Length: 476
Image (cartoon, rainbow, N blue to C red; front, side, top):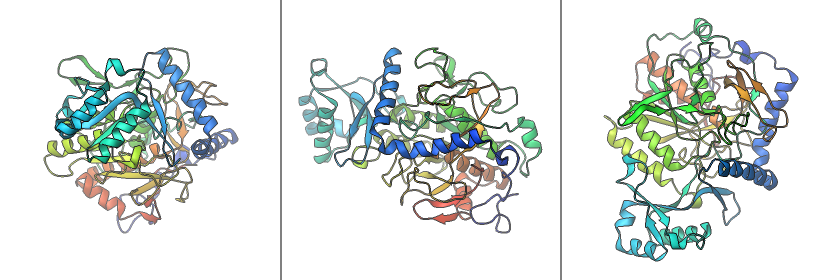
């Protein structure tokens, strides 16, 4: 059933197309308890400092053992929450660095250019600055934050380098995902759908933790490439989620392992004919930098993506827009053949407040919040005037990866098989439903992604602070 004024009630733009099969089966008590725990902990982690410290310590210890970059947390002066940063590093715009006053101040604060941004596409827009060797161990992250604050007070664009995790580092892992029922083979799923379009859908880029390297045997996700060919890169650029790398090969799934695989499965359920491409911008603990995400966004557009899904994000110091994401959006606008040709969709975040989360809060980006299965507001989802729309985000069923969960992150671990499915909760899984819905409409109607979004929004149900609400995939 295609979206139209005659079909589908407000908030259900595709009628009952997806309201069937294992997703609607009555779950057993354990599965229902696991999803309830996911939802409870999405709320609890915001206010439980002991739990936050425990998870931070575990994640940092795993990174140290693998010689990965550290991250530090800063508590906002008003006590509204933590922000997460790369230690010893500042980002400024090229215009700021070229100003003699700003450069002189930064030099006096013992900051020196890194030499390379690590992202060729944005080298002309941003400059990375590091503490000089003689200042290391003397200047703290708070000192760098004071430097940024002073630059901002003088009218210059500068920030610490924020981490862009899966809505924030303590969101995914504890309490979930939960082993769920199978959707069967992909061929069977397609055979029973009511989609009217034929052919290959638009290219949808998923910027996330990557995809499981071992293909499933049930047909799901098999068309997604595991590498991208890159000039000068022998064998291409990998998109594979290592699953068990932090610490290396301890026999358990990492903190955010399988996140990208799950997101891709959500899109494929909603738009089975979409061409999905993975871009691994986050390691398997889900903690990457905003710069890594920005670079992947530009690469995806250069590769021909028309829809980009970002099931990640962060709140920032001063609630200011992310400098790297802003630079990426500028670059994308230059690459596009027509304005707004690429539709960028992002999870609003699981912060449970109205503070903006980036990249979702950019005007150019479609922000997606999370709702309960009856389209009622949730306590855990970010919300506010900047949220454009929302979809069910509790107990979503999708593809997962093979491996065992650790008792370190959940008191009731699951063991997942090769063709496993799981139920998971968060705005990370609301956003790809919207991405998939847009991809489906593009293929069925022969319209642009932005036109498809407008049509989709016209069939939503308004929910205060959550924009237009949709029931696409059923949750629990």
